[in-house]
Image (cartoon, rainbow, N blue to C red):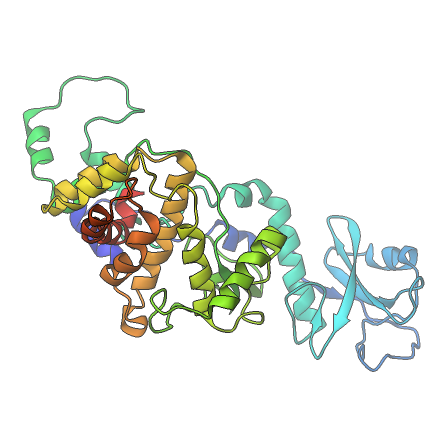
Length: 406
């Protein structure tokens, strides 16, 4: 769908557009060294878990290094001399022999990923070592320019198009006044494009915050939907939001004592707190803890100073003017508040994508999060009551236009 939108926003439909998905890491994977099984020619008593021809028994690191020096990608399995009964996968890469402790629980593994065969494990390992060696700097930077802001699918091809239409840019040098035809073209911009230009903002610097994700295993070629890069290896592990299809997500409250447990776990353990599905099966406990955190902030996420401006924005009936006013109101927030709000709105936007299952529209989420994120600075109960409607409208607009405003 986003390709279609970008097509109609473009002034030149015949212009060549490069592929969205980035193939650099895929090409590197194709260049990675192939595994070479080093078969043992001596008579070695096999272990019941290591019944393979590449098992060489109890040999030293030096012997393994000498055997593997023949070719890049060669590998063997040996029993450790220091810890008999444990096994090591010795692998040749980069003219060095790498040694990994080998485990087996029905499948073979040296880390988190598990494989049916040693050969597959080595293949994946060589790919990983090769890519992380050749593209370390690329990998470190590849999330700087994601193809969309978390869930803002329409921004995929939007940026290049907008820059063609905009006559002024903070980075652009001063030049001659635009021609009359250019001015007319500017006036013909659709409402959608005018909205999208709000993203060309000088909002706060970026603050990285941890999001509640769970590991998801992809088998076969897969591209990351966040940064558009190829997820290398035979088995790739990415992250997906958990529990998005639960009916009444964020509306239904979890058991209060368990919500307090989650709060205490974060107070005690910080980022190491265990909030996995093994610890808390009910997703409503986790969502309840998140809402509790925002409710108990001494200064709300939408601060007291910015509150009046946001309420005035909620009172604007024209959608475009409300959006422009909201864009200006966001500039009043401290950087950390604005960045936290950005992450939260991206998550809630994703929740609305599962509205058919969870029954939580942006309007319903606005009802839930309006009073949670915004609190009137005055203690006047009547004022606070009157503001509830506008709080909902503000949060609803933030969620709906997350990809434009942040």
